[in-house]
Length: 392
Image (cartoon, rainbow, N blue to C red; front, side, top):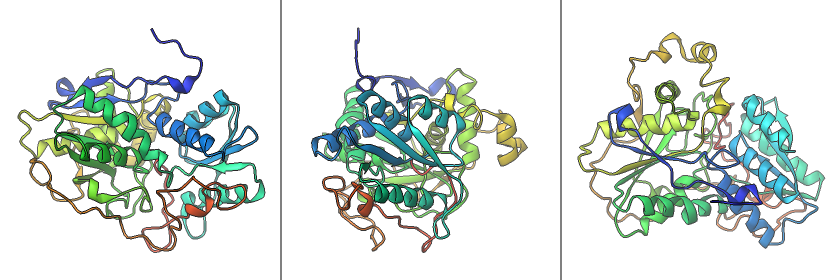
């Protein structure tokens, strides 16, 4: 029996769905939505808040501020309510209405950016808004999920060890890529593990994280229109890109068997199915991470008129395969264990100022914990796309 007094202290780590009867391939799906925040973002949100408290940056008078397309905002809303902090989430006009209402129900203030930045779209407009708020009020503390090492450390300390305990013979792990906190935490952990594990990142078509072309993305959670500062590609063995229509088809196929997951999970499942179809998987133990559940997507992913209007009449055809149209971002190498790789980071430019390994350990400017260490870097020479789903 579990008895708690703070909502952020509970999280179900050991629930998996065996997808073989649904997809025809052996894949275990780690369900991360069973906590009071409803998503995997509870873990990094807790890690970042507690680190800020320990550093003396976050005090009872502080106002937490964060840019989020959804799940991180909900997690911080819940933690702030529990701990007695004020919280202001800066989101944009494409954030799901149920998510905005949920944050407000938890006592958060939600500021919706409706106009894109002239040089960086809605994501940059959100970041600019956060910086302005921090400059105007020295009580504001911006955790900056995009650069804060607590984002990946939470998964290094909790998510990956939980998978390792449940699957000591793990061969392949599929992880969605947004801010890349989950990806990097798990990848770093399994690099040090007693046996090699192949790390396959799953990204959305239209995201630039792994060198894809910038394009329209409407599903929140995965994909970036800028190169994530937390990403170190030397820890990633492969990356696959999935069309959003395939993500939606995967969600509906799971729903027809009683499992209602979010759009990001559809992307991860579709990408994993496509990868497994290309390899000899006999005796292979594969796990994929499902970031959240589907209730917050009832008016989008599970709303037939919305889906058909944006993706066409055939997108919900039940006879279409789960991974139809998924595209590999790189050629698919054989399954055998990866060899040694040289550690390196994606080349940074001056628009990513500051060392992301120490972000959040000092207050570089009044009112903003990481405002000066988290400027945006666009992948297309200075303009980010007007898309939702910038890593949660």
